[in-house]
Image 1 (tube, rainbow, N blue to C red):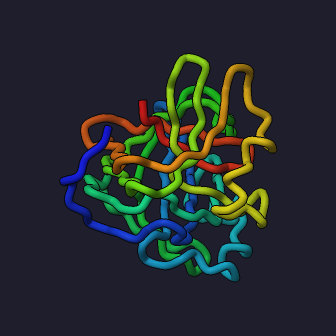
Image 2 (image 1 turned 90 degrees about the vertical axis):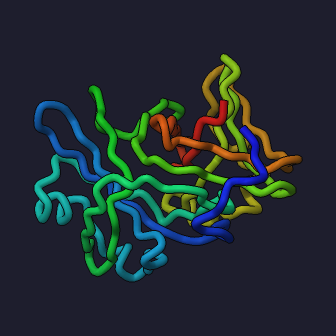
Image 3 (image 1 turned 135 degrees about the vertical axis):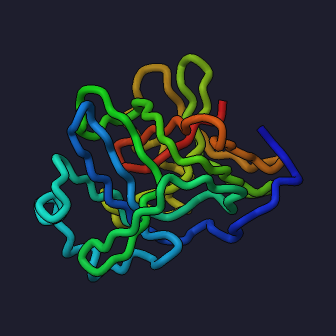
Length: 209
């Protein structure tokens, strides 16, 4: 979907650094809570490297903890956010806010090229003329990269994304491409759950169509 009129809450996000802590809790099902450092701080490296899955799990009573980052935004703006209850946490000196929740079925471990449905209530905006990096599934779905990660490959950067497809172990029938946008790209998940996937470098993509 494209638009020229969506007002922006935040602009100039591309390249901004952040980190996420994901905590899974088991009650009637598996609930995953996503905490994000943006825009409170840029996930300082010194504090981030000291975080441990075990320490966070013990402090907050989580069954599983995933450290997701450091990460860098690739969208250019945010048009709207309908946040979940804004719970604030401090993880090893890094302030974070709960930004999304997921209800999981089965395996809590990372699964690459597998859809997850996230309650984030937001509009992501990608500017006309900017490059986007996309995964295309065999059934015609398009997923645009919303953030790249340096946790697996510290050398990952916006420039290296142009040839990332040569390094991905894509499932049969999947393709990766980089292109420049003719028009602003809008991903609106204010009325529905966002559909996201990750590749093996933990770069994250959102479903476009």
